[in-house]
Length: 438
Image (cartoon, rainbow, N blue to C red; front, side):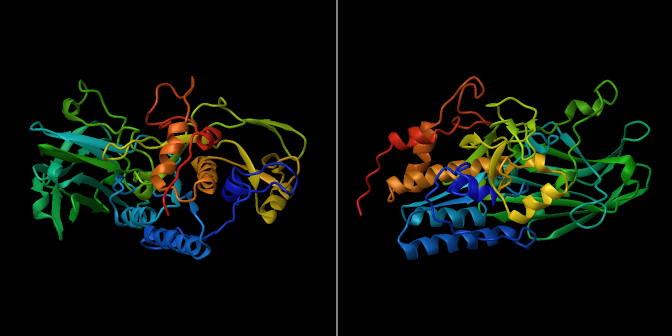
């Protein structure tokens, strides 16, 4: 409700808190995040909305404030490509989405440039893994040409009671893993069984996807599990215990304390935008900067939240995509925004002593994040489509990105936090006069 209100609320309840495009009509589709093959349900939703707009003979600006932090992060997955096809089939169709809110997570992206010198990275055991058992689990993505000459191995190092190498399975190449599950036993150098290593891989057009999992390994809490590579190429992985996969170990010993660390590749905080459509060049992906951080609440008290107005939110996810494309496209105000809310929720907040989350009228509630920044830009896209209903998604994208501005907070743009800068809906409107033959 707060997302829809940010984009299109009419403000008639109290005369305040109107959305960016207050005369818009709304088509709202519910979504079940727990559904298997979840991204396909989003494709269905986009198809339904576009179909309804066609029946009405209207242009449409779609907002998706949903996303998954796991995946290939390149916009080349089936869901993203199907959405691209729908957006580009006819003019008057624009999709805007949230970049994600993992900007302040512990580093969970790993990019390794594979060379003739063997390098490695540690992954930690997760007692509450996505596999529903205690396990080591991670996956990686790479372009076919960048991984054909890579050989990889999985091993273990003791991390409790002093670091020490414990053993590895033989090096393998992905060609011997495609389309099958390969099982190796991981033995320690003194003959103890440390676990069974399962690897499986698939090719998706020009990309490889490799999964590694070690269910219920022995001595799990005492070991880190190394993924070693040698050869020539590059790969990317996104993994975190927050997602149910294995944490990529960032706090490591010094080389002086454990010499193998000379060849360690650490995780970083880049490429943390959500997966799929958020990485598509056909879609406008939005980061979040701090909006009004001080307000009077429903109880008449002044609430002040930490941060600096105009600065990028610490939680706003970073780009670029795995392929190096700029994301987010731009940033919009998200933290903190007052918008419409479900009456039952707002009544419960008042009853439970949380009136500080409500506006003085008790009819609007605070929200934030890229989920709220995204509908600011979706509303802007709706205004542009009202003016130029036959504009293509790229025309609208370029108009909005081109009107974005920089300031002392954005620094030099484009960059991986603000994209092209901060949204300016008015400048996008007055600078645009798209005429498309019918």
